[in-house]
Amino acid sequence: MPSDAAANVMALYRRLGGALEQPRLSPGAWDLSSEGVLIELDEGFHFNRYRALTLDHPWASHLPWRDAYLSYCTDHEQKSGTGGRRWSSPSASRMFGGTDAEGVFETYGASRWKQRALYDSMKDAIAIAGQVRLARVSIYDTIDGVLLDHVLYGRATLPADEVVAHVLNRRT
Image (cartoon, rainbow, N blue to C red; front, top):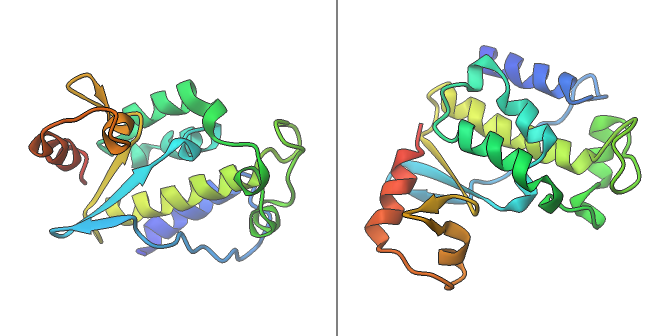
């Protein structure tokens, strides 16, 4: 990761309440890859106050999914998950100094939500730096009035070329 992108990610880590001096930042594998474009498919766990915070930076302002994702963070936070590892994990608690009780946002909040938001922003930063071509799509996206989640679960159909066009419109 270029030094300016790394500095942006570390600033986000601190803004999220990061507690470690030198955190191990490893966002994990990409969801999909097709024709030189990495594709992240974001389910409900990705949309909450912490992800909104990571998108509320000048360096993220040109991401093609930013505006939709900010809206999803507001509209769907309750679906981010409070059970078990959706709210906290040992590694997330270490990264952020602790975790509040499920559903509580006082001292620490949801450490796993913060960790997921940080890891998503790392992938965004790599794309902004031009190191990868990235497209982010969400289960909350609609294509011709049809919810992508419904298409993915077979409750609705769309022509494949419309889905591909949507993905391509979301690439960096």
